[in-house]
Length: 361
Image (tube, rainbow, N blue to C red; front, side, top):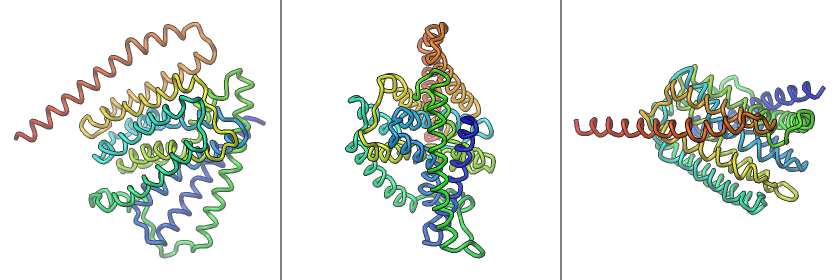
């Protein structure tokens, strides 16, 4: 029954997010909002609605480990797994705005989360600061959308443009939004309750379940959106969706959850000492990967996917107190990670040298 409720909860979250995005997109089109702005805000944030529903439900019910694990785990999953899989399908083009603004913002926000967690909790003040930052970010996106290239605008029109002829009216679109919210609330309740039971049955902490099963489950809308966009050749959307969702997870999901939590969100030393630094490392990893040629290649996609497998394996070994954990940790710390850093630095320097040669010619 618990497995059934967990799967049913995931299904309701995915269907609810789809209904919410579809209804909100059409309502935004009726209001005359451009498809580019809709794609950067309504869709990117709407695909994060499962994370918001689960984290808020967890915060209200006192399951704060799941709330924190869901946000941190989703951000790690989005970059390593979703971008990795999408790049394996087709190399992903990275816009200069992502490299110059959005990815650095994601890195800064990840560091801010670490600083806020040093007192072992996220309080209402922390939440208000994050939500205020989200409001400023949305304003910037709307302002910046006016300066996007015609090619990018056409891509977003194809994906998110709405032909208003024959489309449902205000009432039906509002019904989709409300219905989507209801499904999100019910689905999040089933998912969180099931996750608690899983943690007890498997003998692991709720944090581990939140970082893995719950994080991957609530990221399903991002998985679908980015993979479909990659298959269609809409590669700006595939990358932008992940980065935008990560930014919303920190400022929106964690911010709102911190505000509504009755006694704040407690943060364990395990999260502060390992998982949040991993989230920062993953965000930092984006810069050299995105910088090398302005494309996330299939090789880099395999690198990202390999790191997600390694991260998940580490969590499993740590949760089970396996004898192989020290050897695995030493191999990652002293061999794999340094080699990756050296390789990425070499590729970045090579790309810079090629650009300088191109300018001189």
